[in-house]
Image 1 (cartoon, helix red, strand yellow):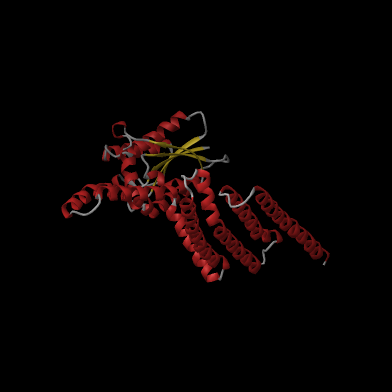
Image 2 (tube, one colour; image 1 turned 45 degrees about the vertical axis):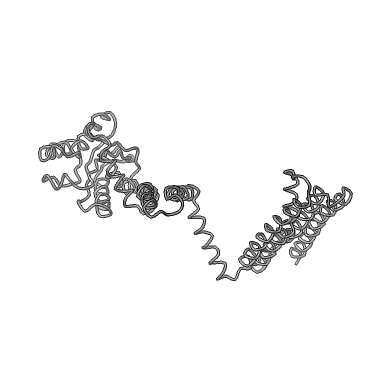
Length: 361
């Protein structure tokens, strides 16, 4: 059976007429619509009730019933609960063995906020919104704007950029009046750009998540937190060392450096510090995995892999800077490869051996 539900969330029918909801049946709903139209011809819920009657006539060949349910003028949760109770009353009064599905009729987005309440009680086949053609979407627009202004997250996303845009001109005037250095217009535009980029990339959520992880790691005594701090310092030192190496190579060169030589100089100066940072973070992670009892043998490969890659990159950079001959570079590349291979095989064998002993025990 199809149940056409006419929803009046603010109970205009009950407040403006002597009709008490729920109203069930085509004739009863039509009579309620006539009374409401007589009491207030401009009320949009009149169209909702007549639309429900129209749908009953449209689906006359099927098993169909129409009912009008209402909330109360307080709105929000109280009105939704009232609608839910009246829907329960309507469903209990239906004399049918068929599965009941609902077609909801409303006059705008505000009444549609009760749809989850109805859906929790009966399967909803669809929603039919009825609006007067001359005022189409006006109520929905008003309700949408109201929701935006009430939602803190959406309010910050929309109103903050608009506020910055509005402030650009007065800030520019203030900057000219006070003879401030730089352009206040540029500063305001930069602030707006940074805000939009951070919102678009979700940087705020990522920063909050990172801070939360760091706080939990600090209280849990995680070695990873300390290793990350040390690694960050090593990365900074490595960057400075790379720049100093580049300056030294440029000073010793009689001609301008190529892009390959610039990259090689930066790598040659920074790779050792970067490798130390990688080893530090991997050891911190290994320590935490061991303390948590989730350490696996293959995790121990990480420091050796970092060292092997650092050795290879250092040798290649030295070769391009003519600090190393080709034969020496080849030997270093072979050594780095053998180091990674040896660690992989060693820890794989160890994992297999100890796993078999555990299973045998």
